[in-house]
Length: 146
Image: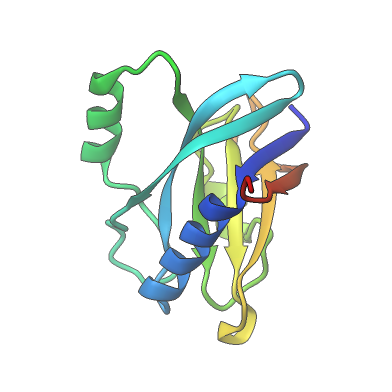
């Protein structure tokens, strides 16, 4: 996998969520399908951040179970997103040491100094154990259809 593909509306939703919960970390799931060399996001599912600390994220496990029970054939969990309210759009040292979900895409929203959100995508390599060296993914944001 070398790219993560989002629609402009999906990217806007993620940025809106990051602003809405600022200064806490926003988080959610990316549902979609793997294509040739890429992952195409079909749906963004914002999740409550269950972490007690504002600078951590923990996706509500009830959401994971509900999505798995729904078991739609046209979409799978292909990744997740989270924000860095006062940091860069890059994996943090905590991300590297506490990483879970190998083989999935990580979309990180950096908001350095509370500024405009910046998006970047990474791959948590399959079989990698923490500390993880994330691989950069090309991020393609497709414009809205006319």
